[in-house]
Length: 430
Image 1 (cartoon, rainbow, N blue to C red):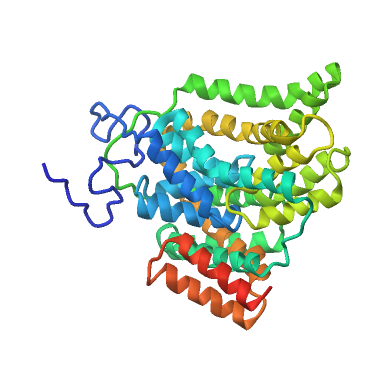
Image 2 (image 1 turned 45 degrees about the vertical axis):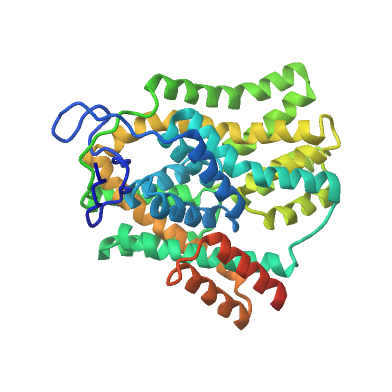
């Protein structure tokens, strides 16, 4: 039978059943009928899509949200704008790298827990391998002044600008939510800090709960919970158990491997927002302890700016160049596992309860405010650090205008825009 054509405003792909989120809690449709079978994608499609993002997502965690939105919402239509924004708000509210956790959450909803792991592998592996090879074979280097790196920053400005504009039209369509977005952006710019995003999102949720009408949901189909509650409870218990137990185990055994695992685990478990926020903590863990020299640390940081994927893969570089055994590939695997393990535990621990919360009228009011606050945070991040670090001269403004033109009217893939900006940045110089 021919596939049903999508209706206006319908985010479903024309040849797939609904992949959106339920209005009610797990196990109930709007009419009270038994839920339909959840849509599941293949592990191969999850891996190939995330690998493409891992090879092309330059610009840091904020820019990644723009790349993810274009791929998962616009191109693949695995979820709609509201569901995407809800997951962004969830991941921004949890400790750890927000963009990596968003990829894990989308992969889990698409293909279960293994899908979440596969999505993480695809998004993480390219940058992790590149940084380890850089650490082992090229020695210390600083790429911050390279022209093509500056071009990548300009590409990130264009991608985030497009994402902010598109999300604002959907998530802040009226005056109250626009005002909340502007207030959130102002607060983020006036009081920057590692926990300000959590406070802003919480304030947005509170204001939404008090003053906003609940967001409308177009989907009438319920989807069973992706993960059972017992898995969620177990993962959350393990998250806190390791956070409290690893320092004790290290103190008792004195084992250097346990100490390193504990250090990277704490870095992944205690930092909100991820990205550059984790760098001071990592510096304290590896440089102050004598595992990595300051020059090697800064060289790896410069290289991390020049490659796509999550900045948390910087941990793989640090593990590889550590002066304390194990180093090399074994050290990289230990560091990478330790720093990303908290992300899996908090995402798997939260997702079983997420749909039920979203089905609550009160919670949906709060989500309306939270989503408006997310737009404000993206707007603030577009200005700083992206705009302030990338648009330094009139020629930079021309290049970002070209990038936006390639993304919006021409609708070229992001990796093409990234390549054009890298070449342009190299031609005009840093």
